[in-house]
Length: 135
Image (cartoon, helix red, strand yellow):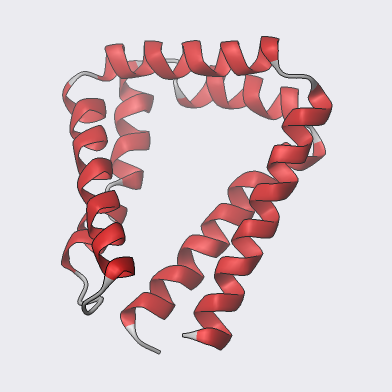
């Protein structure tokens, strides 16, 4: 397996694990995430540090040449900038993320949230399939 296949497989597993609870109970999952993960500056920084290995992996792994590696490197740069903001200004980032969660929770129905979560689970399974069997 090359680095792209390993990365796709791991991101697929992460995506399935993070979206599956939302497919079962979307509003409760969003409320729990908002109240537990982004309730303080320390927890917001911990979330950012936990997500931090993704950015260097996207920026430094030898993906080769072409359009897909270019997109992955650009995504790595965007994630690195976002994580820099989360670590340096966790209060602003936490307020922004909590506001986004509240907006989505109040404006979208439970069926739409569940449908988006199921789409996310299917997308994660496709990433796993691509990582294991195609690449």
